[in-house]
Image (cartoon, rainbow, N blue to C red; front, side):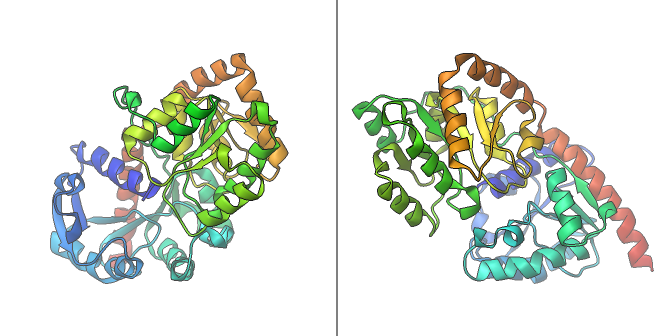
Length: 367
C-alpha cells in the first residue's frame, strides 16, 4: 500500500522497541504469519483489509470491540479514518487531505467514503497526528479542527538503505531499453494518480531534445489512470523514453536508485513525501515540486521547480543532469537531510501524543 504501509510497519517496529509501551496489534486474520503481528500481543478481527468496505466496518465496529477485549488504554488508527465512538482514547493519523483538495486522487466509492470518514475521524478523536506542518494547517483551514488538537510528528526514512540490495538486477524492460540506447536514467517512484502530476512530467521529458533525452522510469502500483499516461506518451511519440512499471520488488527498486542519475518528484500534493527521503538517503540527487509538504521535508537538499510548468520541470532535469557540481552537492546534502528523519523520533513524538490523548479522554469520560 505504499507510504501507508511503510508508516504502519515502521512505526509499529519502533514502538515495539520501547519499554514504556505495550503494543497490541489489531489485525485482519488474513495477516496471520506476517511479521507485523509478531511485534506485540495480537487481537484478530474479520475482514479483508484490501476491501474498503471491510476496512470501514472494522474501524467502526470490530476494532473498538477488539480494543475493549485487549484492555488497551489508547487506540491509534493509522490510515486517516477512525471509529467515531468508543470508551478508549483515540488517536488518528491523517496523512493528507488529497481526497478533498484533489478529488481525482481516489476512485469510485472510496472517494465518497473518504469525504465523510476523514472529517469525522479528525473531529471525534482525542488527538490527531499529521506527518507535516503543511497537513496540520490543512486540517485547521479546511476541516476546522482546533489547532491545539493536532500534533505534527514527522515520519522516518521510508525503507532503510541496504547496500546488498543495490546490486540487484534492473527490471527487464528498463535493462532492455538501456541496452538498446545508453542514456541517463531519471527515476520517480509514485502511485499512478492524477495529483502525482506524472502527465506534466512526461510532457517535460518530451521537451528535452532527443539527443539529451533521458529514460524516465516510473515504478509504482497501477491504477485506472495509468492508461491515460501511456496514451500521452504515445501521442508525444516518446513511448520509448517512458518506462511505466508496476509494483517492483525492493531489490529491483534499489537497483533503480543505484542506476539513477537523478530522482524527480513532481507531485502537486503530498502529506510528507517518503520517496524523496528514500532517494536522498541513497545519494541520488533530487529535483522536486515546490508545493505542499515537499519543501518542509527536502529543505535545502533538493532542486525545486514549478510543478504546473512542464518547461520548469524540464529545465530542472536538464540542469541536474548536466551540472556535476550541483548533483554532487545535492547528493551530500541529501544524505545529511535524510538522517534527520528517524522512526525512533517518530515513535517518541507519537507516544507523547498518546499521553495527551489519555489526559483528554480521562477528563471527557469522567464528565
